[in-house]
Structure formats: structure tokens, C-alpha cells
Image (cartoon, rainbow, N blue to C red; front, top):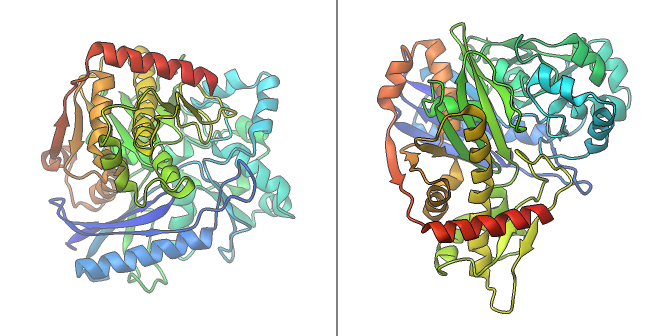
Length: 492
């Protein structure tokens, strides 16, 4: 049996290739960043060729760093930024234009028109999602309507739509496979939540021809094999696939109903496993497919904050307050509190449970004594408070108290942020030894299909805790912080 699993984690700002063995020893981890494009206010785009280039470079460097030859790769797993919408020519694989990123808000008016027409309750019932420009359907319709000739070509079957998982599998297989998995399909507003299939009524509502769509498959099976790549030999199986947040839930070994995790990346995403049947939310949380493995389906409740680590990037790139993202923690620790400053990081609108795409960031409480350190601490507090709102809504929706809180993603390395999160939630926050659980989940899904791991019990056995953060904030300080937060959110 080949020695390692290769996991490709294609994110919003970079692509990570992770090489690991069956005992979870990381042989190599390489991240390659790529540009973001902002052609107009509220528009966010990616160049698919830049994504593909970053993927190839990351894979090549990771295999070299791990001293692994391509034939030693037992399986490839893919996890991806979700909802980002791509369109390309079937014959050549050439993109018709830039992909529209999940953060993009250009279709807010189209969503508002459907809402005004009374379509949202039916859409929520059918898909488990809210009617918001976050999701893929209105993005795809925009491409079909605004790229010259795209609609006619799509209807004739000459174009292929996909989220980034679909695009990567197509490129890795030399164009042989046009597939997605159930978790990614459930984020498009085009698939039925219960049926896990493309829905003709949704396709008609959003003006999407069926001919452009990929085949929906499970999250752990053979989708195709590599072909025509310099980085890998032909024939390496690609057999694990899930959207990034569902992959992180799997990578955290949240296999039982009630298990929950929060991923802190560009945004913050809280998911709870709710079992084999979907739970429809009355508090504007999302109901989504978590995964399908071996014929068994798991659903999840999800709450998302669009901006988490991106707020720290803004401090670095927009304001120039820090040189590196890691500098935010020592700067924030240099003051005892935020000095009365509250920052609502609604830099791309407010997600769950508010769903206000028109909201914008708010900083309140600044005076002559405010310093960069106060703003840094207020930024970390704003991230933790956004997640607190999600957790409170999920506790009420599921009827299950949070016994503990598993965390992952790059920003969970920030110890101050994790301590603030535990203080606000009032429960322990548990950080795993491997915080790259998004990539780990994709590796698990691929490894299960390839026989690297024999089952979920074997996965549970290798999962390890790194640190446990316990609450220690005084109740009066916590309540004062929450009161200031609610006032600021109302003003966003």
C-alpha cells in the first residue's frame, strides 16, 4: 500500500497541500497564496488559472519537502472554499472569466427581488439555506446573463459549472470528471436538502440549465484518477471531497449528533452534527449536508460569520497596524482590555443569525486614549463575540447545551482569541494538536475510500487534544462586554 495521503485545501486566500501518513504524522505542509481581485465595491473575484497554479505549486513543493514520490500517494482528498462559482469551457477547460467568490455581494438586488416576490420561505424549506448572495445560484445566473454568449453555450452543454472542488477534480483528471459531492452541492441553492439532488424547480427559478451542472456524488468514493500532470503520475485516485467546513467537522471527529466545532479562517464557521435527518432552523441558521460516507448521510446546522481572520488581515493590510497576522496577539495582550472600544467586523455584511448583507463594520468607543493595542484587542473580541452569537442561536435551536467547543483553523493558534472565546461561551474551548482539520477531514474521507483507515473508530483513536482553554472572565465584565456588543451590532 502506498505510504501517504495528499490533501488539497483550496481556500479563499491560498492553497495548502498537506502530506500525512496513517498515524497523522505530517510529512509536509505547504501553502501558496494567490491574488484576490476587487474590481468594484462589494465584488470579490478569483482567477481560476491563479488558483490552479497555486495548487500545482503547493503539491509539487509538498511532495518534494516530504521526500515522497508520486506513486507513494495512496489517495488525494480535496476540500475547498464553498459557494465560489466558476464556469469553464468543457472542451478546453478554459474559464469563461473570473470566479465569483463567496464573499461577493453583487447579486444582493437579485436576492432582494426574489424575497419581495415571496420566494424565500419556499427556498428555505427546499434547501435549508437563506436567500442570500453568499450562495452560488445567483452568482451562476449573473455569469450566464453577463458573460457574452454564456447562456446559449451553457444550454447547449458546452460550458461546465462548478464550485472549486469540481474545478480541481476536472483539472486533476485532465477534464475526465465533472463531479461535486453532496456537501458542496447543498451550498448552491440548486439542490434539495432532503433529496441531495439537483432540483428542477430551483433550476427554473434561478434560470440555470441542467446541462451545465456536475454529477452529485458522495463525499468518499473514487471520482477519477490523475492524468497529464507533471507533479503526479497518472492513476493516483482522487477519492475524498467535502466543502471546507464540513471537512473540518469530519476532521474534528464530530461523528455523533450533538458534536460541534468552529473553524477560524477568513471567516468563522460553527457547525453541529444533527444526525441522519435535516433540522430546519427558525433562527436563520443554515441546515446543510455534512457528508455522505458509505451510504450513510449526516446533516449539520451551521452559523457563519463572514469575517474572522480577515479582520486581522485588514489591520495588517488596510491599516498597517501590524506587519504580520501573528503580531496581533502580543499587541492585544499589551493592554488589559479594549479601553471601551467595540469593533463589529461586518466588513462583508453580517452572516448568521442576523443575515444583513447591507451591514458594514462599526468601531465604537474611540477617544483620545485609544491606541493600536486597544483596536487590536477589540478586533479579537469582535471575532469572539460574532461566534458567541452563532453559538447562542445554535444552543437554542438544537436544544443541546454546549459541553465543550472544538476549534480549528489558522486563527485558533491565537491563544488570547481562544481564551476570550471560552470566557464568552462559558465552556471549555478545545484546540486539537493538528489545527489544520479542514485538510485533515479531506484526507480522512479520501483515506477511508482508499483503505488507509478502516473506519471511524480508527480515526477517533488518532485524534489528539493540544490545549484546553477554560473560562475565567468575571460575570460582570462578560455582561458589560455583551451589552456594548449588542448596541454596536444594532448600529452596523
